[in-house]
Length: 360
Figure 1 (cartoon, rainbow, N blue to C red):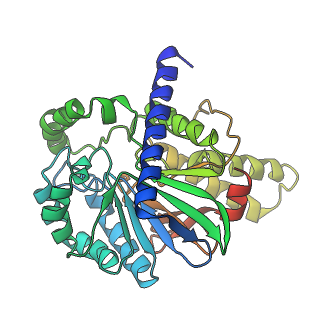
Figure 2: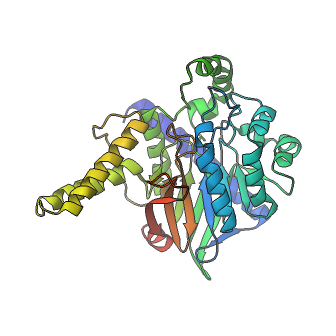
Figure 3: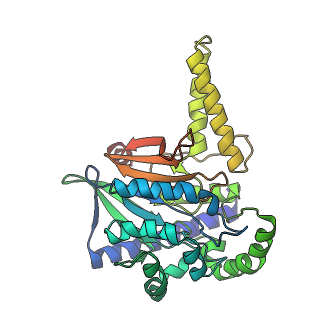
């Protein structure tokens, strides 16, 4: 790794250390938050980047999938967690976005009014770190009720009386140069230079959403921070790249494809296996094209334990959204809609909380 890469990794690690300490102090003041794996249901979404319904709006194409997901999880009494960059406030003023997506906010508000809503701020919606703006703008848009927008939260994961470990929920931009340390300059550039250009050319570019090298490096930095802690699993967004058990989604598909191809060497006449191989190959190319990434294998760090998960985002170019479900003792990476374009979740990967924490 280059000196610049090492320096960036240390900056992310230091910022996450500080954020974790602030979360511990918050816990001492408020009390512990507990997630019972057999009783509590959570769904986590991040990085919507809701805009003004113009050419610079990255969420508009995903609105249908996200709203359908909200209706589904509300009926099943999930707690909704929206983990930062929900509104694109580097490009737009808060009032503009809240007005443009009043119905989506109404759907989110149902969770809040029922006490099943957790809100976090990210770098693109850090306006919500100011309580006066939350009280005067965001809370009314959600239909009222108690509302606190957090930087982070520690969840104590329990199976009955037994504590399995801790989940650390945070947007994930902490420590990055453009999104944290020089955020005011980045915000100015996005709002007054990039936004007018994007409105004209209607091309999506959410830093670092389309920069695979940057996203990969930042995913690695967040993983290495989590790996160094015992019984702590980091749940983040920011990079727009789904990660499950510390492995990017495309790497999970690559592995499944390689295993199926190896198996086919001994079962060349297995038509069902050939169909599976074809579907996996198509799925891999779909993901690679979506990430604007070449199909060549990219260098990967060694993943020693499943201590890092990433929601992906709600602003994919094809209109899909991804998120994480906590339910029935499992953590699941899901995509909306499913493979048949039906408005229901497609489970992309799953693992039990017990197995995750046993490996951490």
